[in-house]
Length: 265
Image (cartoon, rainbow, N blue to C red; front, side):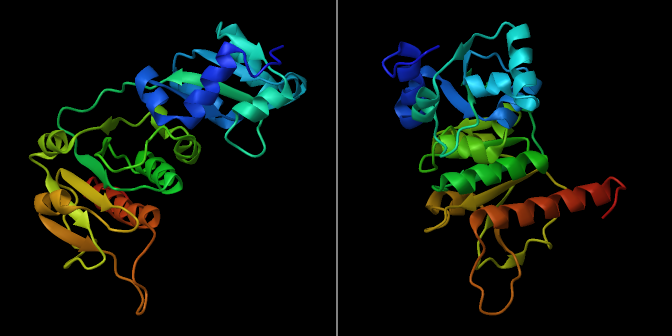
């Protein structure tokens, strides 16, 4: 059992949890909890190692079964003292398991039909929810230009609920973002937009740009946009939370594309 916070692996986990530059340099991140570690197993991600508490070994349900599956796959699993898990965890009530994983490098389609650009989204909770929603809506890649919160922030990872393992995330400079979205219809979500989000033909290859919580999208995104789309709202309501607005627009895209394919509208 690992009992010391001075253990090298413990210090590494704590650094990955708290320092973006360490995550970026090592290209590794931490996922916590039974459900997220299960998602990593299903996605076939190569684990580096796992920490777990004694309580997980005594669990009669999913936790114990997960630990058995990890050991069967020869994943290095280290028993740690509860206090060590508390120190390594980013949650108030740790579930008794966390895993260190390499950042996935997922293939991107050569000509994606749906790209999401997140310009200046700074709240980790919002970004996590957006990534989870984007995966559910069939977004083929998410571009993260400068000014957006680190996608591997622990709160983002928890909120995304496994989206990191299946959805291509591209951290890119502005020039590279421009290159990647060339050839698609670029639409910017804006509360003052002149076009309703339901009036756009989303069946064409499209890029949706969502701006940050406070200032919205920056000048570069605005310059690329073919037009600005708005979600109709009741009088007196100024705007939606960026995660909610992203979900509304993305699932309008899903509706239109399914309708075109002959599915339910």
